[in-house]
Length: 166
Image 1: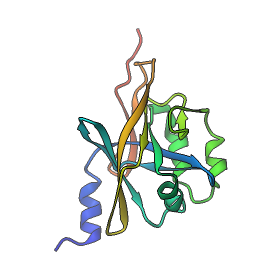
Image 2: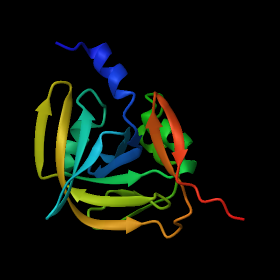
Image 3: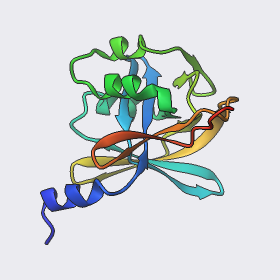
Image 4: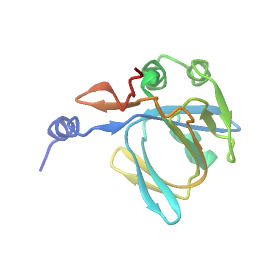
């Protein structure tokens, strides 16, 4: 059997997009930084989001039954760190950027590369994490394609896809 340390070391070799997952409802706005997001199917368009069950936002996501996946651009490293920090309150995290909403009223990062507004359709608990299966109800795409993407690889942020202007 593979142990947790060996698994984490191996997973650090997997390059992942960095996203901020958000929700809003009666308990306010909540969010966390995630790299465990992927497409499930395009018919109907659906994403999978993994969330640690020990997250202070966990219960709010389950109660609200909706979320937004905000895929971060290269300039969002500080924002990613804010949403990963246990030192900031939920509302303090949101003060670092401008937000709007789409169909579900989950916070949409105005300058994200792309934001997926979703409903939570299925919930599966596996080990320390909850897997959320989320049909997409609306999409907001960045109109500035020269923005690079923020990715996480080998336990560090990296920027990919920047277009250099001559």
